[in-house]
Every structure is written in C-alpha cells, then in structure tokens.
Image 1 (cartoon, one colour):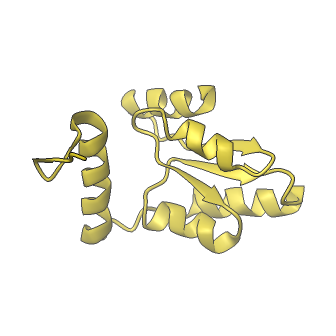
Image 2 (cartoon, rainbow, N blue to C red; image 1 turned 180 degrees about the vertical axis):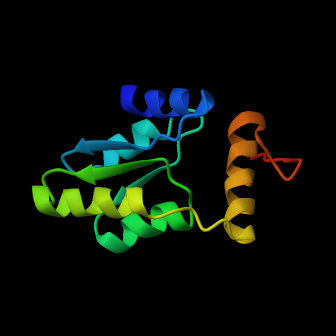
Length: 115
C-alpha cells in the first residue's frame, strides 16, 4: 500500500511516477494496491501483459509474483512497463476516465451505478 500511495502522491505533485509491488503470486498485492484511489495496478506475468498494462490501461503500478518468476524475468517485465507509453487511444482514455469517475463518485458517464 505504501508504494501505491507514493505513486499517487508523486503524480499529484506533477512527478511522473510508476510503481512495482511484489508478492508470492502478485494477486493480493495487486488487489491491495487497487484500493488506493488513483492507482491502476495490473498483474503482470509476461512481457505482453507488462506492455498492455501501460499501453491500454495507463497502469501506474504493476504487481509481479515473486514465486512465479526469475529475477531476470521480473526485471524484463519492469523494463517493458517503464518503456511503454500510454497509447492515448480514445477508447482506452474513455475507459480510464469512467473508472476514475466511478472511483470518486460511484457513477459512470454521470449515471449512478446501483445494485
């Protein structure tokens, strides 16, 4: 959680910041990181998911399962994540905006989401 909060704090201060969290499988850490408002954490298990996390979802945190990967693999995932920019494609930007709106208001496109 501290790493995720630090990423958001840096971004709010205008600093480009990305984070990485590690756990046994990476699942619990991803779930925990996504509880921090403003975090878009993605579980990464190969180079493709590392690239797509940034490219399509503008992820600002990735989670890696330390028991699942070698140090070399994890390093490659991190390098790919850092190197890949957000595509900015309208459909991706719209989805990210909808998630941010829901996170802060409980609505999507101005419509309340109810059970």
